[in-house]
Image: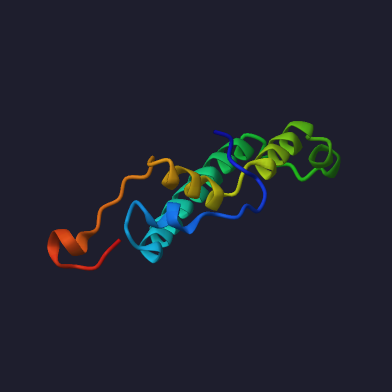
Length: 107
């Protein structure tokens, strides 16, 4: 299933079903979205680090087409929240409620 890159109306019942509580589901989706964002940012930074130059030559900076293409590719990727929502709805996100396991309240 392709992940939508634009704004989409979501069925709240589908989001609430795995946990039984829409707010708990949104908290889990938010945590997963942060994980996805961090992973993508690390990946992008690693790719762009290959182009790091110790020389401050303006012509060299403006002519680096590969770096520009990599940046454009990452800009076109779906947002981390959309990825997290799709993964959650498809059951690809593993979560546990420590409140029911240990008496604490950590999601």
